[in-house]
Image 1 (cartoon, rainbow, N blue to C red):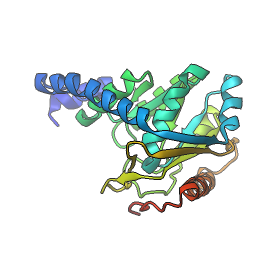
Image 2 (cartoon, rainbow, N blue to C red):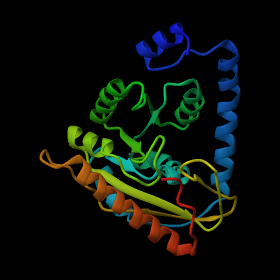
Image 3 (tube, rainbow, N blue to C red):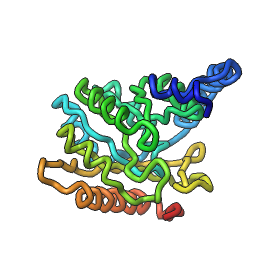
Length: 244
C-alpha cells in the first residue's frame, strides 16, 4: 500500500482507488447484486425456525448482534436483508481495503448500513463506528470466527462488543439441500439454484458487565454449532467444516 493510500485509509477507513478500480466497482456491484437477487429468487425456503426470537427483539426496537459463522453468511445475510420491511436495520462491517470496496458497494445497494473497518487495521475506529450505529438502532451482522478463522471458533470480539453496547447476541444458521462450497478457509456455502433452504435462529445471549468474554464466546460457539447441526439435519447434509 502506498503512503498516500495508507494516509487516506487512516482518515476515512477506506483505501484510495485508482480510476480503473472505481470503474470496476461501479460496473461489477450492480451485476453482483443482480446475480444474487436472481439466485435468491430461485431458492425454495422451507421455514424459519426460531423466528420469534428475532421478532421479539425487532418489535421492541432492540438492536441485536446477528451472529453466524463466516461459512453460513451467504443466505443468512440475504434473509436478514429481507427483514428490513419488518423493522430490522441490518449493518455490515466491511474491510477498508480495495477488495472491500466492491463488497461495500454490493451491500450498500441492498440497503444495509456499511461500517468500514477491520480488527487488523482499524480496530479502534471500527469499534467506535459499530458502537455509534448500534445506538442508532442498527443491528450488525457478525461472524465470530472471521475474517480469517480458524473456522467455527468463536473469538471474544463479538461478546466484548455485546458487553460494551449492552446488546444481545442472536445466533443463527442456515442449511441448503444442494450447495457449492468454496475452497476458502471457511468452506463458504453457496446454495445452488432451486435448492431448498432453512433458517435456524437460537435464543439471544446476553452479556452482563461481569461476564468473561472468552467464556461467553465459547457459549456462542456452542450455540452456533448446535444450530448448524439442527439445520443440516433437516436435509441430511454434512458440509465440510472449514480449516481450523
